[in-house]
Length: 398
Image 1: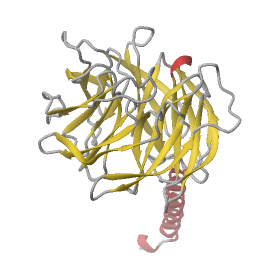
Image 2: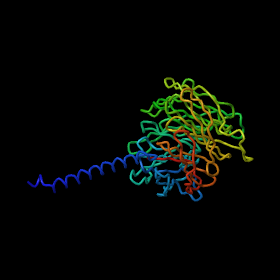
Image 3: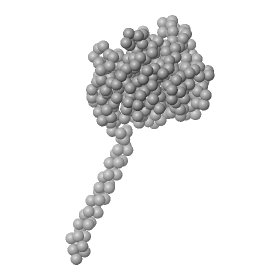
Image 4: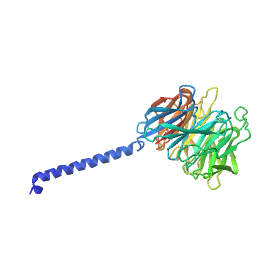
């Protein structure tokens, strides 16, 4: 019979060997994929900028997550979109309009954009008032239904509802900070500068550079309301000037980068009551730092996705400070100070895999790509840099 002929056995043997080779090749491809910095091969990178020069708004880049290479993919017009945020699903992007004359009122703006998931392109939906002059930072709450914006010049905080289609509704709440700090040049009145939502979405933390305080607000996501916690704030060192705040992934610690005295303040966090307690204040500069006559001011901070490291930017020293985080106590230990690859590193971002850090150097008009070491936290320049005029903020969206 044909089924039992030597020829049929020979064909069957060839097919079996081919199947083995195909299986081995598939396993090799899977191993190669696992060995790359991220299983997601591409990401979109959005840059917040100051306009008026070469920048027209929000530049977009495609990032190769295997090599770190950045490829320009367009730019969305917007006026001074200096800080950006996205909703948890990545469907929408929001930008402050850092000004003080929105529709003839003494206030800046917040703009909403829809995102094309295939191309990353943005389409503007609408704009709303920020409630105060000089909006400089914003976050979206974990439900994706509210946005909280900090107004630097106005010294205030506002909540804006986010509709189902991504458009911003009329403000649902507002809080005005009052007072001053010891530095007459920079702390003449309140300067709300950064917002962070607690992991359980029950509290909103607001760093106020002018008052040397991190305010804690109870947050009602259903109605978009904020109210002072008890106590309403934690006082940091006089003249510290807290700028931005970030939670540790375990939710037990909070970190503030202090612009004016170039420190990071580590705090414990009582999640049940929303209370902060200071643990440590540590310099972002090396002991032998050589600074320009203008000195140094800090700007951005980020906790590595692993929770093992913290990064902070130094403007003047032009470096990214790297710290290890004690997982039990939350305290920081300096590891390194890596040159930022330009001048005035205003903002930076670490991607969700923890393999890459992108630094935006405002005064040298470039964005520089670093590879992060997951074991040590150290940064290695890749040699990849792109020109962006007056870059301020970086968003990496996978």
